[in-house]
Length: 122
Image 1 (cartoon, rainbow, N blue to C red):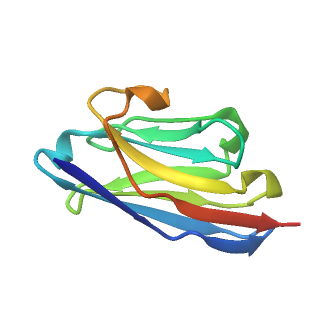
Image 2 (tube, rainbow, N blue to C red; image 1 turned 120 degrees about the vertical axis):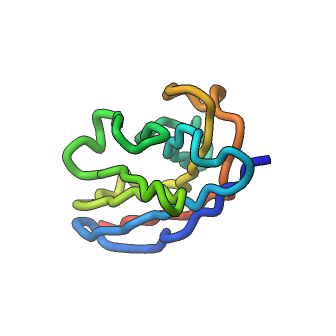
């Protein structure tokens, strides 16, 4: 019913920047809350950032505040994650997800993208 397609991952050095994109499509796509999550091998998936359906409300995990910015192009139903001053500990597979309410827990989301790898070298 709802599809998400991610892009923008890559391999960079510490201090560099990346911009991830998440295109949301399907029935009532514009009504969904969209969150970004990340997961390292052998570790649990963790919350990174969230944005409301209209792009007017955002929240970030403490470790990325001041470095990452989530935004939404409402006309295109595309959500972005601008990542600046990247650190090696940011290395993970990044996923975008769509849900019907404003939550930061992964199991509250109904639809997920395929994930995109972000690797930060020191």
